[in-house]
Amino acid sequence: MNDLLLAAIVLLGSSVQWLTGMGFALVAVPALVLLLGPAQGVVLANCAAGAISVVGLMGGWRRVRVAAMVPLCGAAACTVPAGTWLTRQLPEPVLLLVMGALVTAAVLLVMRGARIPALRGRRGAVVAGAAGGFMNSAAGVGGPPVSLYAVNAGWTVREFVPNAQFYGVVVNAFSVASNGVPSLSAPKWASVGAAMVVGALIGRGLAGRLPEERARLLVLLLALGGGVTAVGKGVWGL
Image (cartoon, rainbow, N blue to C red; front, side):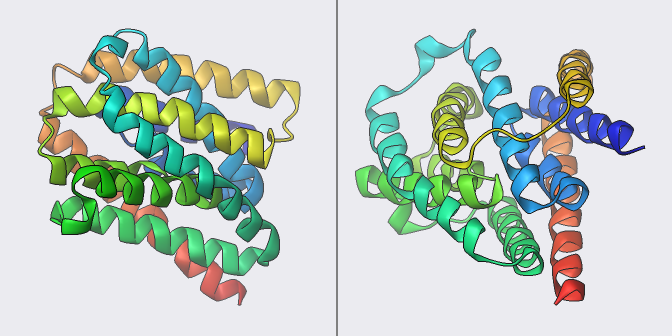
C-alpha cells in the first residue's frame, strides 16, 4: 500500500509540474513527508524535482537569464547547509510543523502575488535565492521565493519557466549533495521513476485542455491543503 501511495504522490506532483510549469514540490512534499517522514520525504522531493527540472530545461535553456540566475543560485548555495542543519536538530513533530508552515505561508504569498520591494533588483535576487535555498533543503520547497521574485521583476510566464527550471536544477543538486539520497528499495525507486514518466505524459496531455489559471489555482489549493495537514500532524505530535 505504501508503494502505491508513493507512486500516486509522485505521479500527481509530476503531472501538475508538466501541466503548469510549477508545483511538484508544493503538491508532493507535504504528502511525502507524511508518508516517509520529514528527512526522507524532503530528499526524495529534491531528487525528483531536480530530475524533472533537468528534462524540462532541455527545451528552454537558451531563454535562461544568466545575469539573474548567478545571484539567485549563489545565494542558495550559501543557505542550503543551514536548512540541512536545521532538519537534523529538530524532532519530527517540530519538523512537520515547520515544513507545513513554510509550505502554507509560501502558497498564500504566491496566491496573493505579493509585491515586496525587497525582492527587486540584484538585492532581491540574493534575498529570494537565499530564502529558496534554505527552504529547499529544509522543507523541499525552494520555488515560491523565486516565483515572488519573478512577480516583482515583472517576468512573463514564458520568461519565468526556463529560469525556474534552471534554478530547480541547481538548488536541488545542492540540496541532494547536502542532505544525501533517500534510502529507498529498488522497487520503490522503480515505481517513483515510472510515476514520473506517466505523470509527465498526463501533464503534457492536459496542458492544452485545462486553462492555465485554473490549473495553477488547483495546484496551490492542493499544496495549501497538504501544508495545513502537515501543520496539524505536527501539532498533534507535540
